[in-house]
Image (cartoon, rainbow, N blue to C red; front, side, top):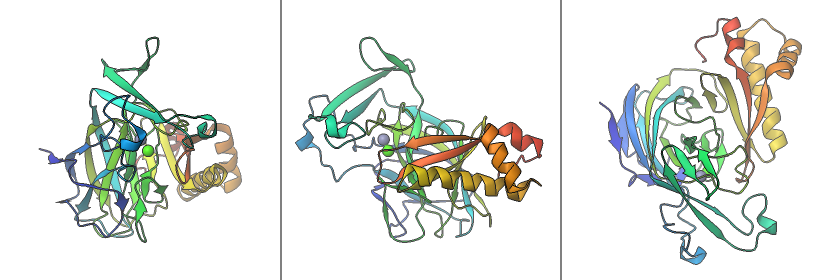
Amino acid sequence: MSVFLSRENFIYEMSPKHKPVLRVSSGTQLVIETYDCFLNQITSSETMYQSIDWTKINPATGPIFVEEAEPGDVLVVNIQKIELADKGVMVTGPDLGVMGGNIDNFSIKIVPIHKNKAIFNEKIQLSINPMIGVIGVAPKKGEISCGTPGEHGGNMDTTLITEGATVYFPVFQKGALFSLGDVHAAMGDGEVGVSGIEIPAKVTVTLSVLKEVELNTPLVENQEGIAFIVSKKTLDEAADSAVKEMVDYLHKRTHMGIEEISMLLSATGQVQVSQIVDPLKTARCFLPKNILNSYNIFNIL
Ligand code: CA
Ligand code: ZN
């Protein structure tokens, strides 16, 4: 039996200041309902820019208090299922996304979802890749808008955070205070136009706690491998830092020195871009699972 959490319980910042909307114990499966990142305010391609309340962006459903979680632990989020609504929305406009300086008009596209395809226009149907844009825990200090990514997760807009993936977060506050939102039916790495195919959803996850495990930044695991996700002021800093996290990880778990690990990542690691349009930029360093298997690393953390 899973616990249902309605999207009426949402926050715009990840922060210890919010009262938890739900308390669960480690190992609980939840179905978390989400609004799209515009709080479902955009209902047609005719919706006017002025009619949208831009303070109501990136609601994340939560926060959920996980009983066993203490600072210094890791919250493990196993994503079992992402069920999408039947249509999504995309926007772009002046000062939005990479092309924002060259775009004169705010523009909306409604994207119907039909038989696992996103109907982009008359000629293009895209395979869906349901993924979660905003997912994380309360940060170490203060409150961080759900539009901003960081060590606590948040708006990481990472295409690997999908059905079947497991995301690991450092716990900074008692109970972890987990929340998620901003689901996309599909998104390309970079999210260059400023939005994915933004869509309401129901996400099934199991939350569990690993006691006293070191982790500095979110880590995602899927069938193919693992990736450290880092958000910084620039993409360069984010990419370098993600690589260093992976080097550290391997250094602690193998007998390779950093020279050899550096060569290994140069040979088979993948530095990938998550997004380049949010207040901080997000990059990741991906390592294929077969490398971990070679060292009998089966428990990721
Ligand atoms: Ca986002
Ligand atoms: Zn989004």
